[in-house]
Amino acid sequence: MTKKEEYEKKTEDLILPLLDKHNFELVDVEYVKEGSHWFLRAYIDKEGGITVDDCEMINRALSDLLDKYDFIPDSYILEVSSPGLGRQLKKDRDFERSLGEEVEIKLYKAVEKQKEFTGLLTAFDKETITIKLEDDSTKVFQRDGIAMIRLAFDF
Image 1 (cartoon, one colour):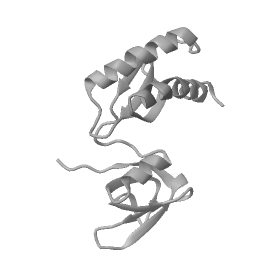
Image 2 (cartoon, rainbow, N blue to C red):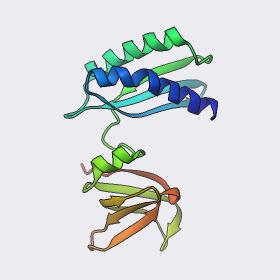
Image 3 (cartoon, helix red, strand yellow):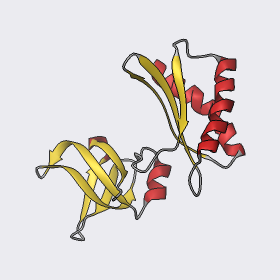
Image 4 (cartoon, helix red, strand yellow):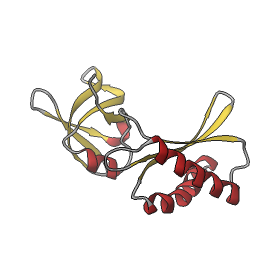
């Protein structure tokens, strides 16, 4: 396990009891370097959507726990936020919740001279993602070939 993965896992372990207490869901935790700064980000959600006050409450509680356990030696910025409209789907529970929803898929390598596809998420398993295209045909993608998959949104 890399340091990044270790920090993310330990942060998940700290935040999950906080979220359970309020019936919130953990969408993702990431520890990333952007420019010269490290960011520890927790994305949370709940039925009906997360509010700024929800994020602030969890941020304060998580910050206290991170200070107490102090397992990240680097200086970092803590952010707790909603996953947003164009949230990426990463975990099986993300796919389960999004069945029947329109998704955008970006591939590492082109398939039939295309790297981007949009369609309704109809099925998934450990290895594949299946979408229904506009022409009612279905397309199956290998999960390890997908660079990014997220909910599609129109403005």
